[in-house]
Image (cartoon, rainbow, N blue to C red; front, top):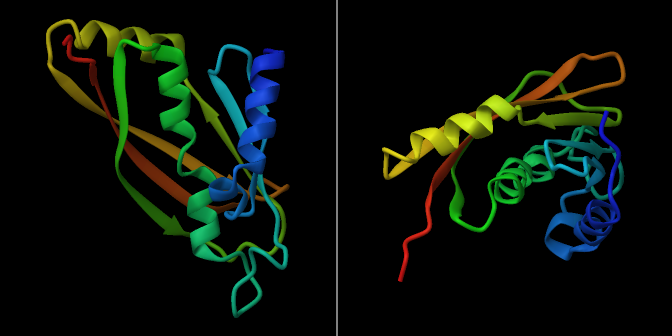
Length: 154
């Protein structure tokens, strides 16, 4: 496991207090110094529970929504455009305890993106993440499609 840097700690801290993300109930627990791994926690709380006492589906999605996009922006650098294009969520079990999600990017993935964008104008990548409880039981699965292209030169 790669340790956090002061920059990733600062980003984690500010992101957790950013009203848009804070409202989700999710908290970023860890960002690797190279941005290739991020971990998120989502607790059942007054802010996140729904009518039937489990974690609200909107909180499940919002806690994981921006993470892969942010990771790719940081890993690819300023020469690339990275946007969320679409998402799908599958609710597997009601979340009645703290759930976590682990996001990872491999070096090979980043190299393939750069290589393909040498010959293609844009590409879409699909990323999968699971929200799991302490026992590893999957409560929700999210698939994110991310659009990536080179920035146009002015």
